[in-house]
Length: 279
Image 1 (cartoon, rainbow, N blue to C red):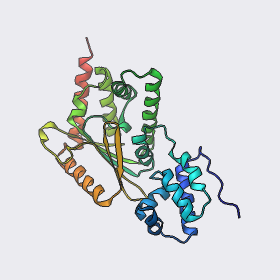
Image 2 (cartoon, rainbow, N blue to C red):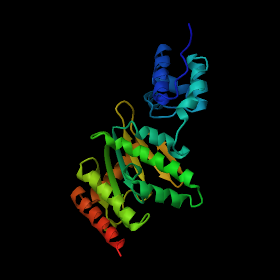
Image 3 (cartoon, one colour):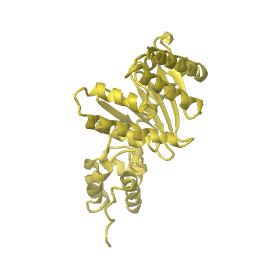
């Protein structure tokens, strides 16, 4: 009997690869835990591969083909599932973000990518890469703005952000561009598309001083935490680690301004930038 056909890279390759993995595993009579053991990964990790929330890396694909007797199918097709328009350190997180049912984010320095405007994103990428060509910056901006289309759906995913006051006070780009960026956040909050809070400077020390936190939950896979630094990032699926970062996020939200107070502050700072730009 012929084996499965190679996947079409144009049609959600990671989701298709995950579906094929689930089919092959069940055909072999293995549980997720049983498949994970020889790969030295958890059953929940296998579940995330099957749900499409995690990438199948080549080293796993080779072993899975051997264990399940799939004749090199997963090794051949994992390349299609790992292609991404995002930087390597963020690609897996961006693709998980696209299928999350809820995203909670603490942002210590920048407006989160899902809420950025084009001029704000362009100013950030230019600051990151001051000698890059305009074509390179354009590609990065397009990738960033593509992510914002997640919010075109009126209800999904739930997005709840806590912005450090530094996000509001650090001028990125021209004053008018910063005013536009903050007004966009405020508009999304007024439309009830996003829950936004501000962590004021006078809140003092807090549980997330180590850096940004992004938490993602899914319909059919365990939650993930994404931790990011300059040019690097990693997804965490260990339940204890995710729970620790969830607690940190909850503690930050508890001492942040209420959504109503936060909206007033965001709009006030936006007005300050708008007046600054006037002669």
